[in-house]
Image 1: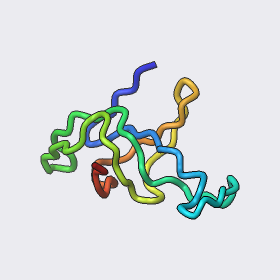
Image 2 (image 1 turned 90 degrees about the vertical axis):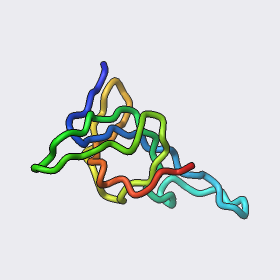
Image 3 (image 1 turned 180 degrees about the vertical axis):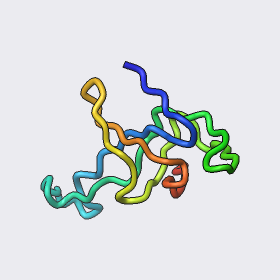
Length: 94
């Protein structure tokens, strides 16, 4: 199934958090924080949103940092994805 976001929406897939600390300690599943780094899977066309023109600054394949509790989680073809507004993306990771 293909997903195409509307307006200023972006579909992202969370990147798994590190399982070990820098000192080599392996973290249990419950000790890991929710990842905030994600990879962009699909980008909406932008356009007029709430009377303002929105230009899309991200593209498919970008790695981004998102707000911690933003977006709507969906499951499509077994993949867990999140749909967020472009304004919920805080930074692009290079």
